[in-house]
Image (cartoon, rainbow, N blue to C red):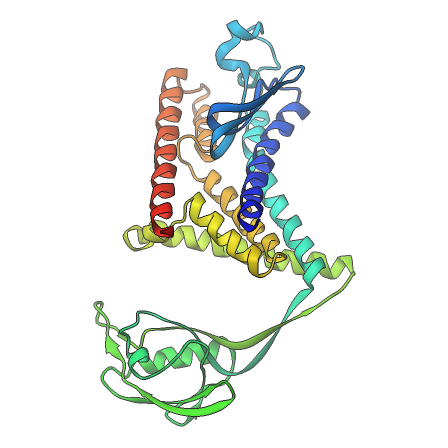
Length: 356
């Protein structure tokens, strides 16, 4: 059941994205011949008065098709103002951008719904820092007996304070203490411990103990029915998720070799969503919001077959007062589509193997 819920969330986000394109086109009187979820062989379809609605076998996205490229079959004159290609650049830019905008709006709606259901986060900051994770197992921290969940209150007898400043202070001391033992005052499950750890040099010659840290904080939630409070809290959470997503893509581009292995395909995303649904179904709303924002950012990239790539074509047309030849546009878009589908298949294969 949890797997089906995760798949339903992804399918809904694809429908939202393509509906953005579809509704933006129809609102401007632009012809739309096909609304498809997925690619490849048709599993189900319905022919409306103007548009064919289809569900296809390969669930790696979807598309909205226009009659511009098959005017002979559609019976529409090539100079018909309702054809996408005959509309002003601004009209076409609105249609192309509408999928990204729809995903962002829907993400905000999901965040608003989650906050209304669970309450507004109210973090309580306490002294010290929390050990979130040990990486890797052979790290200095693991050898010293440090465990995830430990709270470090003092370093060499000096208290660490609270918040991000405490984390930064701890990191600075570790980086300046290569080969020198550090004494940690630790609280573990209510018990006080004293541990000694010696930072080790990383391959980049940086002193590390091999932990992920966070401020020592607990998260309480305050339930409210105030629309103003919910809107403000949703705006803050939306901004944080958007900046986190953009920052993640920035790291991927700047450090592709190390970050590429962390890219998740549909199978891994469904697994994460299923795990969330099993533990706390309300968190599926935040999961959906995060994936929706990711879809928006991905589609904004100036790559062939993505919305950002089509906007680049429009930019070229706006600058040079004429569009790129159709043959070039079609070739670039088809190449990009095959690349993205191939990448999707590789990610599915890798993630499936990892499951077992």
